[in-house]
Picture 1 (cartoon, rainbow, N blue to C red):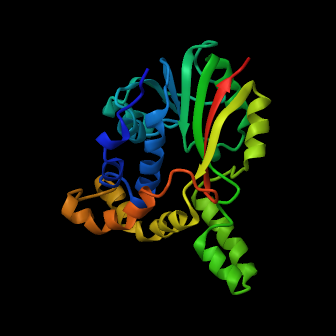
Picture 2: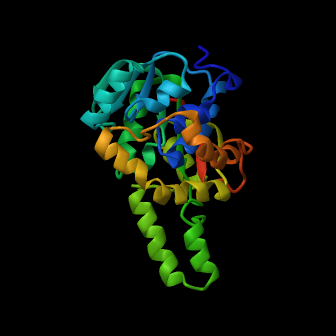
Length: 269
C-alpha cells in the first residue's frame, strides 16, 4: 500500500508550524517527508500515537490503530479521526493478539520509555513475520551537539556544560540517546533485522530546536490558557517562524553528523 502523498503535494513545514511550537514543528516536518517513500502494509499500528497530529499530517489515510498510554492525547487523537481505532494502553503489554499487524510505526517515542526491551519484544510479537517496524530516535550525538553546552566547552567551562546537557535531556524526557550498534543489537535480540537506517537533523538544525524551547514559551502559555499551541495560525503571523525553519526543513535528508536516526527494521522470526 502507498502510505501517503508524494512529498511535493504537501507542505509539511506549514502543516506542522501552524499547530505546533516551531521547534517541534520543524523536526516533525523533516520526519514526515521520510514516510512518503515507505510502503506500509495494512493493518498499521502507531505505537505511542500521542494526539495524532503527526499521523494526520504524514499519512494520506487514517492508520488502523493508534495507541498511547495517556488518556488526554488519546482523546485528542480520536477527535482528529486519524485512526480507525484509538486506544489507551501500554507498549509493554500490547492488547493485541500475536501477528495482528503488518506494519508498526513509532515516531519519536522510544527514547521516552525507561524500560525499552519489553516494548520492543511486544512489538515483535504483534507484528507479522516480514512486517516493518519504522521508528526514529535521537542518537548518541544529540547531547554532545547542543549549542549552549558546546559554547561552554569552547570556554573550558565543562562544569557548566555537563549539567546543561543533563538539564536539556531532562526537559526533553530522554532515557535513550543510543548509537547504531546499540540499536542494532537491541533489535536483533528481539527478532528484527535492520533493513535501512540513516542519521538526520544536523547540529545546526538542533540549535534551532534547542533555542526554540526557550523562544517557544509563549506557545506553552497559549496551550495552558487556550488549549492551542499557536493562537493565530495565519500565514502572516508565522512569516518569521517559517523563514527560520525553512533552511533546516530543506537540508539534505541524510546528515553524516545528524543527531537523530531513522530506522526501518523487519521482523525475521
